[in-house]
Image (tube, rainbow, N blue to C red; front, side, top):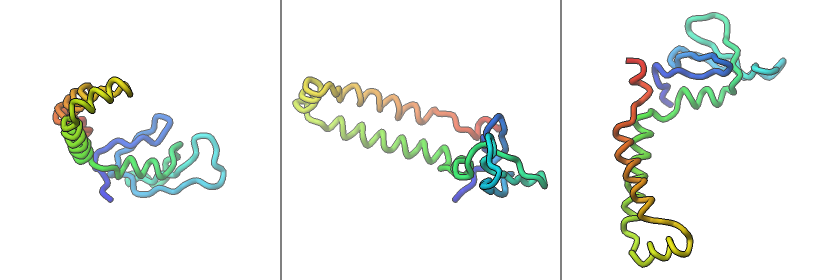
Length: 129
């Protein structure tokens, strides 16, 4: 599991912390009330921060697939789907549009825009440079 550096993690109720400074997460089981779901230990403080989000959601935000890898995977899936839809026969395309209201050409165009846009997308890392 890779912890993404310099990513701002939302802890709930307008609390944010850098992912690489979070060193521990402990779920609050007793005396758990509104806004008290997880104790978040950070490297710069001896006292934990009380977060309103669950430890699993905080951990997912810290260790999610890197933005570049996610964008590449989405782009790859979109390209594969676009190619598969382009290979659909014209007769089947007409049948899908007339009988089911599924316009294959519309989705090919839309996927093409996504593929082109994925290359231009700004990553969260760019915000910290």
